[in-house]
Length: 267
Image (tube, rainbow, N blue to C red; front, side, top):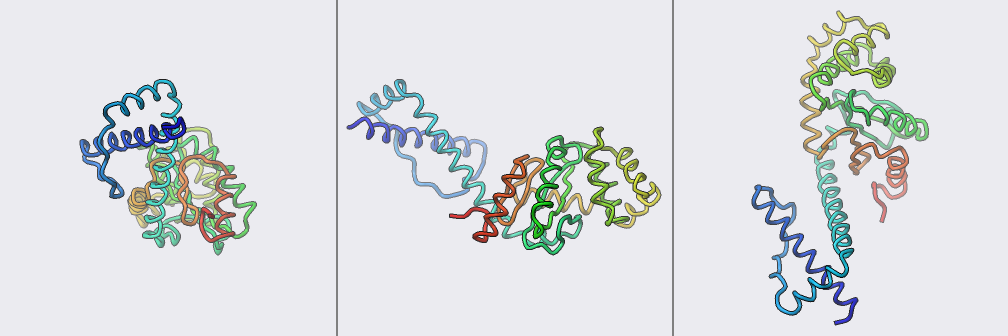
């Protein structure tokens, strides 16, 4: 067997071993495989097995090739699952009942951000939102608050939702001020920001009674779980899920693809 042929064979064997290990782990911990898989081949034995071992010892970088291929495959599977979930939850995502809409409310392209006021990455990503809105007059930007960072975040969510109900036209400025405050977002700090924009604590309390924030909170967490959001910030741009503070350029790339071919990734 040629060196190239042996390398390909080794990659195949190692990939099979990795897949076998992943399947075993899934079976042990009760995780279901997202796709039916072909049966795993029996381990290499005899002379070929020895040659595989020796080749791996001499060329350990092959394992990096396998790891990279596995990561690409997993990312593709995760994106496919996210696209299916997005398709199943179109109205909940893009026709929001509880959420502020920035940018062009009638824009043809929608960007959805899941955020927490106490998330440092979300605060830094505020500039990304500004850039996207400024550079794209056909984009509507929806904000969905998921207070994942504990009781203080949940308390701030209650105030921010009440503020949105009292003064929706002032919410973009409130949102920016609370994001840029520099201190922890809490009930007290959120009420202070609200007061700076002319909304009193009595108005906040009345809005909480009339429009319970728990409804928005439960819907946002349920939706985040349904589409595979695992942390903040996270974005949905058309049919594409983006995790983390990926920057305005990456978001813009997906927007441009949607304009060019109607989906987040163009072939």
